[in-house]
Length: 115
Image (tube, rainbow, N blue to C red; front, side, top):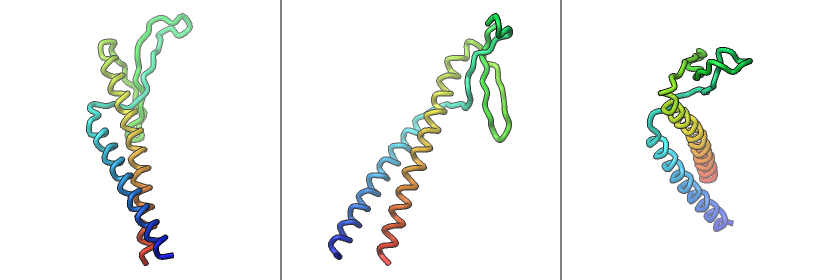
C-alpha cells in the first residue's frame, strides 16, 4: 500500500512540474505580445440602408464605462493588429489561470496526503 502511495505522489509531482513548465511557456508568450487594445472593430455607415458613407468604429468597455472611438482608415491595420494581440492576451491569461489552478489543486492534494 505504501509503495502505491509513493508512486501516486511521484506522478502528481511530475504532473506539477509539467504544468509549471507550460505556465512558464504561457508567461513567455504574454511577455512577447507587444501593443494591444481591447474592443470590437465594426464598419458603420452614415446611411445604413444605402450602405454609403462608411467609417470604422472601435467599441469597448473599460473600468465599467462603455467607449466608442472612430478609427481613421490609415490606422485600421494597426488597430486590427493591436485588437488581435488583446484577444491573444485574454486567451493566454485564461490558459494561465487554468494551469495555476490545476497546480494549486495538485499541491493541495499532495499536502493532504502527507498528514
